[in-house]
Length: 260
Image (cartoon, rainbow, N blue to C red; front, side, top):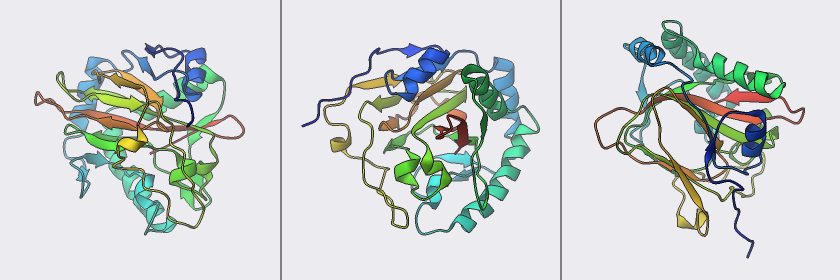
């Protein structure tokens, strides 16, 4: 049996070039950018969500504005996805144009930090969506996100590392934590075939793995390696868990692409 993975440092570290590289290599559990957004900016963004097109997943109590590419990995076409992207950007701009643009700020911070280009991911058929806004106050099931295995055959499957970032506008003071297990997903995926199920993972997916749990805090961004299984617990104090985020993938030319 393979030896378990071990993080070199078990702590949330600040957003530096060295720490960002360590997170890409899964040497640390998470990075935190404290005060990414001011309290005034958080309130402004939440206010701009009034009247927005908040949708809900059929099988999970999670609200969202935008669209998630992973929902189109089987039983639907790329054309279906890019039709959804057009609607998603329209819904997203309803909020962002009335407040401010966290995605743009995050992309610039990564570009400035790494010295590498950043852009929203695209495919020959069109531009992907990035920056999904979510209400996940009741938590989510255990899952992984890694494009080479979630989405074989797409441009985003060419990445060699994948992170996820979330900015929290409001977060539960009790509950609402995210737990990450240090056991990078490794399954066989082939273009043209239905990809492996990556949601609702059982205990075998985390057996023997060390874990890290982080607390969502208003105005903070937390970044972690999404190839590791992770889940969110439900809030217990009536506060919402309102957030915006996307994936960050490193391409073969070392540039970074963003998508949701």
